[in-house]
Amino acid sequence: MNERRTHFRPPRRQHGAALLTAMIIVTLVVTLASSMVWQQWRAVQVEQAERARTQAAWILSGALDFARLILKEDLKSGRPTALTEPWATPLAEARLSTFLAADGSSNADDGPEAFLSGSISDAQARYNLSNLVTADGKIDAEELATLERLSLAVGLDTAVAQRIANGMRDATNPGSDPNANAPLLPQSVAQLSWLGIDAATVAMLETVVVVLPAAMPVNINTASREVLVGAIKGLDLATAERILQVRQRAPFKTAQAFAEQFPTLPALTPTRHAFKSSYFEVRGKLRLADRVLVERSLVHRLANGEIQVLRRDRVASLEEVAS
Image (cartoon, rainbow, N blue to C red; front, side, top):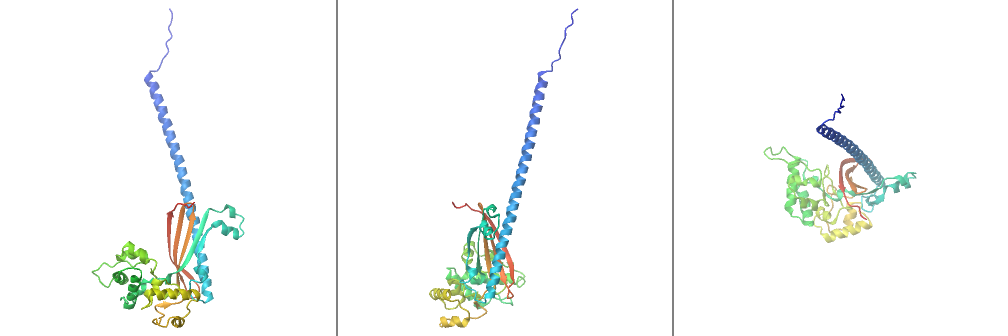
């Protein structure tokens, strides 16, 4: 009797299930691998961004230290604070490796594609809003008149000056009226919006006013025409232009020297007018590829030459690189 050999063949359904399982496994492996690659790429990007941020911070800090050195040396000269002094010359944009080459560094060619620029401006060239409130918490009438003249000179209504004065008073003395909601005391011109000043008005005031920690006079040698009109009662724009021309040739050293040049103007007072400054604003700009970092610092120059940094504001923005 012949025996028939039979072979077991798995059903076709089992072949399909095995194929589907293999496809699922391959899909999971690919997904996990892609996720790992993306995470690694993301980690590299974060590390690069953090390294660039740290490098930019060090570069801008170095620029600030350099500005502090310039201001300290300027104090030793004993000359008036004027726009003819070396500190007032801005640093044009220059490639960072240029400074390394000048220092004799052998790695100058390997330096980052970074461009640095900066400037120092006299903060007392603008009217100080902290002058508006007296030590006993009241609005100084003469200072308010100064701000009103300045407002008219830049094309603003005098009501703006009154609103700022009221806001500075209320913010300085929050407990004077327990039923009122006292605003926060502005630390910069941009924060005048806390006092109800609209953005367009703030933009117009940024070039002519400043907020300093203490009452400080306006520097006659560095103030603009509009600020001079506000600071000196009875002064018009034409005479203010003459003051700018005279001080360009020879900065004023004393109130008497100013009176000899302009005898018809009211006498200057040391509490409201000065010829040397103690507060400056340092601006540093670093350009890395298409990223621009701008840092503004308010510094206080003490009588002993020490330079204190009171505030540092950093702005990061993306700009299209000029061709």
